[in-house]
Image (tube, rainbow, N blue to C red):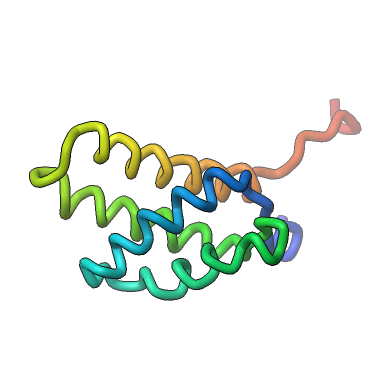
Length: 107
């Protein structure tokens, strides 16, 4: 299977996009490398029905995990759980896109 068979964009729920944008703003303020591009994309996501390039969603997930690591000792546990939860939601969405669809023709 080649990479061209995978989707290049994915559509996320509005709530996930809004939470991701909030956390990416924090990441950008803390100067987490690479947070600027996904932040701009997630801010503009409402204009595109919350459809984002897979690579941007993957980058956002990584930035949020870095943010969680950097702030783990200084934020409330609930804030940390929320940040990690959003990052994992983004990561799961990317993994779902990369997983080949199961077909029954070979069974």
